[in-house]
Length: 222
Image 1 (cartoon, rainbow, N blue to C red):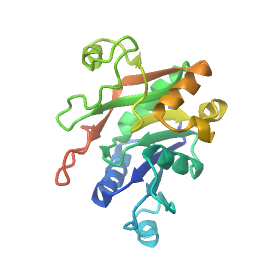
Image 2 (cartoon, rainbow, N blue to C red):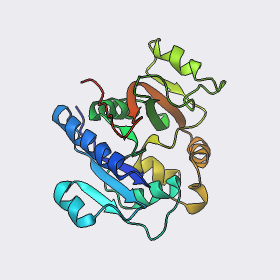
Image 3 (tube, helix red, strand yellow):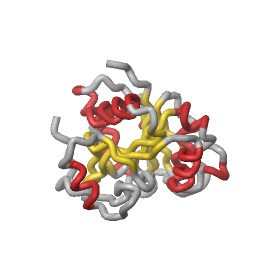
C-alpha cells in the first residue's frame, strides 16, 4: 500500500478537553493503521501549554496565534506550518479513526478528478450530522443516506464541509487556495477548485464521528 505523508490540522477555541481527546483518538488508532500523521493544533486559547504538549504528545505541533480568528483562518495557519503532502482539515470535536483516513486517502489518490474529498461526518449514533454532502442537484441529506446503500464510494457535492476536508498540497498550490482573497470560506475553495478543473466530493466508505458530549467519546469500530 502507498505510504501517505499526511498532516492533520485542527483548531482549538474553548474546548481543551475535546482537543486532547481528539489527539488521543488518533493515537489509539495508530495501533491499527499504517498512517503516522503530523498533527497540528491551532490554539486560540491560552490553555494548551507548548512545553507540556511537547512532553505528552511530541508528534503534535502547537500553533499559538496572537489573536482569535475564524475556522478558515485557523486552517490557513495550520497549513502554513504543515509538512505533509496531503492535508486533512477537521474539527477538534471529531473522533478520527486513521483507518477511515486511509480509505479516504486511497479513494482520493485513485480518483484524481477530485480536488477536495470529505468523509461522511456522523453523530455518535451514526446518523448523518451534516447535510453539505448532498449531490449537486439537491440539498437534502437523504441523498447521502440513500447513496450509502448503493455501491458508489464517492458522490459529487455542492460544497465540502470545512470541518472535514482532504486536499493534496499540490492541488492547494495549483488552485492558489493560500491566496488571502481565495481563502475566506469553503465556498471560495470550491469555486477555485472547480475553476482549476477538479470536482468536490464525499467518500461514502470513510467516516468521522462528532463528539456529542464531554463525557463520552466513541472511536469507530476496528
